Image (cartoon, rainbow over all chains, first blue to last red; front, side, top):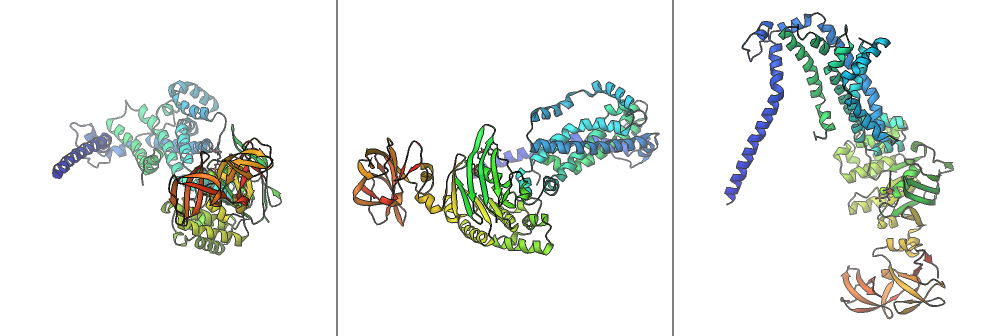
Length: 278
Length: 348
Ligand SMILES: Nc1ncnc2c1ncn2[C@@H]1O[C@H](COP(=O)(O)OP(=O)(O)OP(=O)(O)O)[C@@H](O)[C@H]1O
Ligand SMILES: [Mg+2]
């Protein structure tokens, strides 16, 4: 009797396990297979990339990457991408962290509206804004500069950064700050000695998130820059003229930093989304 | 010198009147306990004194200084929070030493004071741990130690022992009282445990619905409650109440018996007596026993007098069964009277 029940339970468990394993494999494949192809083709010689059928094993030939590096303008586009993303990261954190703090700690009229408006900035289609923005940038001399594009990317990153920092600050009990005040801290020292150490990892995570948003952005970059193109805009521009191996190499160079960064901050992103990770 | 004066303090949260008309003077080095049911405004009053909440009206004075416009750090107070507020990114040692480091005390002085207060609170073996690695009771003791280490003029404690087991609480209670008496600190201690309040306090302020209804010594609060609420709130089992009807000048009819009482011309009064101030006798209140609970030292008899619930704590040698009739004589000088309209005590 007991033996039978245990057996059925065991069967069910085993079946559940198969389903579980299959789902995990499928999900992993969904992400990893395209990345793998990207990797193979990047690390193959240009001839192999253009040939058919394709090999499933990379040749470890740096031909494509060398070609990529030597392609006119590619390295400066890479540099531009890094600069724009860096400036975006700094701007969006210096603006968003105080906003997130204020939202979590103070009651002020229009607070709910403000939170809604912040999200609504994402509702404006960028193409609609791009033309007037380009005109305005040309008038003010911001067109085709790192700062100009970073400003646009900052507006894109801010909604996320504000909401992320808001939820991070809300996760820190006010009593901790109050305790610090009663122990001799001013508002500022309580912030630097108690809140900041607790929040720093989360801030870093949302900074990196802003970096990735800018890094991956194509449209504004394509419209607002001409000479100083970022990598995404540059690749887009040369999409029809550039050979296949160049696209692979470019795609690879774009994906890798984003992947590494997200991987590095995964713990905080998970924490932000409420997944227990310890 | 840290006398605390609270003058006409009131606090509203939007429409909700959390505190009204608070007037209280706490003498230098006094141990004042704020006692009241959950939600009566104890924490709010403490936070106003600490400077974490701004009163809607009124003044707060500490020493000879009006402090209600000063930030918490300039009030000379230390506070123990109801939910501990132990810093999670610091070790127990650094938590206790936090305020001392803010005062820029030399390292060896910090170490000395942290060690001493940690020993006092029995947490010296936990100094290297983080708050995530502590139990609730241990965190609470860290919070108390952190406040004590500051050696403040005034210490504000919001239910600092609520999470300890009964035995440890008893021990900590005694130690805390000793430590504070020795350190000449003025203390305000919030609790809703009346035994704790009785045992610790120089004076108790009983709070009810945002007001202080009585501020007096524990014995006074127990023996001479100023309001019916206090009489019913303090004491376990609580005081008994029976309606009294006037019989003539200074004579009152209570459940068919005639008693001397206040010379008031109220239409009715409430006759009040503590359960332990009753003895079985020839003449007295007629009661029918309902539930009999032997408690070892005493016999707790829940009975009915005049249709109302009535408790008596009697000698445990007595044999009483449910539905027995009893005649209970109240000790004459322990009888109290309350006006049901004003709910205030009426003097005889
Ligand atoms: N920030 C606030 N906003 C609105 N209402 C509040 C606020 N803080 C407290 N209150 C209300 O004020 C009343 C008193 O609260 P308080 O925290 O002082 O109670 P308490 O006596 O400490 O209770 P407990 O014993 O449960 O801790 C409660 O009804 C509470 O809901
Ligand atoms: Mg409270």
